[in-house]
Structures are given as C-alpha cells and as structure tokens.
Image 1 (spheres, rainbow, N blue to C red):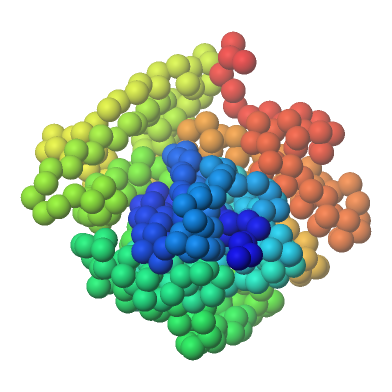
Image 2 (image 1 turned 180 degrees about the vertical axis):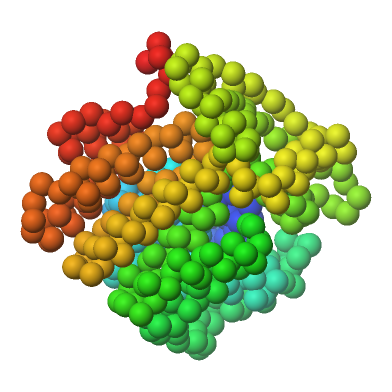
Length: 486
C-alpha cells in the first residue's frame, strides 16, 4: 500500500480569549476519532497584543489501521514553506504569517478573519498607525494557494459564540483536511459547555468556506457629502458629551467657513476639530475613569460573574502642568511661568495608586470630573482655544489658494495630543512647523510648500523628541524643558 509522503501541517495563530487552544483540541479529537495519527504543540504569545499564541498540528492522512503498527514521525514546530493550512484569527496575524514565510503559493490554504484588533505597535504611533488591511488581503491573493477571508468575528457574534468555532468551520468547509463535517461536529459536542452555540458558529463558517452560503455584499463607500454629515454628527455628539450644547454651537460656528468649500477639506477639518476641541485634561480623564460603562467593560473583560467583586486601581501621576491646567487662566499662567524659570515643570509629579472601585477613591477622582462647568475659565482651555483659532485661520487662508496645501496644514492638528510632557512636545512641534513652513515658507510654490509641511509633519510624528523635525527644518525644535534635565 502506498502511504502519504508527508503529514498535513496546520499552523494556528489566535489571540488571547479566542479559544485557539480549544480549536486545537477539537482538531486533535476529530483526527483521533477518524483514525488518523496526529500531534499538537503550542507556543504562548506575549501580552499587550504584540503577538498571538500559535498552535502547530500535524495530521498524517493515513488510517492508523493501515500502518501495521507503525507510527509516523511528526514534527513539533512549523517551518517556512511547509505549512498546508495557515489559520489566523485576525488579519494582521495573517500578515505576520505571510511575512514569516508560512504561506506559500504552492502549498498553503490561508484561512483568516478580516476584522482588526490593533497591535500595540499600531497604537503607539503619534497619529494613525493602523496597518492597511487592503495590503494584507492583496498579499494573500498572491502568496496563498487558496485563501478563505471574511469577517469571522462578526459571524461569531451573530451565532452567539467565540471566533474559534467559525474558524474551525471554515477549515472543515475548505476541504483541505481529511476530516468529515460529522467528525468535526462530534469533537465540538464532546467539548461540553457551549457546544450548541459553537456548532452554530461552526456551521456558519463551514457553509461560507464550502460556497453554500454567501456573505452580503459590502456597502459602497459613502459619498463625500454623506461622510461629512456623519463626521458632523459624531463630532457634535462627542463635544456635547465633553462640554455641552454651547460648545457644540461653537463647533458649528467654526466650521461654517469650510462647509461651502471642498467637501474633503470640510470633512477633515470637522474630524480634526472635534478631536482637538475635546482635548484631554485631568477633568476629562477623571470623567472617563469613573463612568459606569468603564466598570461594566472591565467586568466583562475579566469575566466577572454577577456578585463577584472586581478591584480597579488607577495609577495617576499629576504634576505642575496638570494642576495649572485647571486653574483660572491668570493663575495657571503664573504658576507655569514660575515652574519654567526654576526648571520645576516635572519636579513635583507625584505617583498615586487610587482604588477607583472603592467609595473613597471613586469620589476623589470623580470630584475632578465635577469641575467640568469650570473648564471654560481654566488656563488649558484658554490656551487650546487660542491655538485652535490660529490653526483654523491658517487652514482657511490656505484653502483660498490651494486645497492640497490646506489639507496638509489641517493635518498638523494630529501633532497636538495628550497632556503634560506629551502635550508640551506636540505643541512645540506644531508651532515649529507653523512658524517655519506655514507662515514663513521658503518657497512661493504652493505644491512645494505642501510637500515640505507633509515631510516635516511626518518627521515630527515619527520622532516626538523633535530631533528628526529639527533636521528637516534645519534648526532645533525647542520645547519647554526643565533646566538641568537631559
């Protein structure tokens, strides 16, 4: 009897809480029940979304009864170019697998969900650091022998289960495994708790991969006018929550000069303005940390049952700037000037661990949120509004000359974020670009000016310390730094 030359190799990359280990167990159970020799190993991933836990399985596609008592030698680890089935529970995990050589056009069937759970490196970026999903999908079309890609998380939610069930169904439905649907379903049933929901998810994934069910066509991208209206709606909602109806009216007033012009510019200004006007100060941070929705989310994330206590401890490190930001404008200005002269801006930062799930800690933090009505009189509020008005004037002036230039100036608002030292650096970078390239450009060519602003902005976002921006501008960027510190 001619035996297969090699086993079928399966590599699974799943994030924490997605049931990757359970799915590996299902595969082993189905293979064992079907009579095939199989082996599985796992390599734990690391925390904070810097990588998935991987599970590697090998199934020898010959019945054990036909081997005459012999056992195949199976490997414990995958090797690039030798993976038959690559399974990824999230799109960029599929991209990692392709980058590492585990997906090949001669051999690999790629099964992956197209939804995104952003990696730590994406969140760390100063601006939008998200990886382009279209690049991964395009690479899959070139690098995989066959690819099964759709939003499996959404399907899992509709089925009331976890994504591993849908992934398992897609594997079975793609028909790359020597396992029958019945054997796979039986393995799920043996899992016990939650089997019925898992079977629903399995069936949904199986039918899509097998071609017996089609996904609804994705809606076409919204027209510019519709996109603008949606941004305006979300912006007003955000600012209403931040400071109330009068603040929303100010938002609308500021946008009026742009609404009759280029819709792309209007949408971008509306988006950036809403974010900037809802700047982070300690009032906002305290409000978000003490909302009931936050505690509900934390309970859900840790899987707390009804009645089980969950302790939440927040780490805060306020300093002179945070204190000055909520003082009346004149007092805040004087305090900061005193701290700057003496190099004390970062000298009094005090680390505090506050148990916000307890009554005392909650009331302590919540009391800061109750300062919201006084925010318009604060130093930070006055400072931000003046900077916003300057930015809007520059964008509006540029829009009369060239839309591309106006868009580049508008995008500089991405540099302003956070509070404390982060805000200090971002503001310094913003002002350096405005002073050198917006108000005093070295060229009269509008396209060259726009390109120079874009280059400088990208340098500032890549290096918040200001060194890269200083090289681009040809002079150092100075941000308010305490004397004597390095």
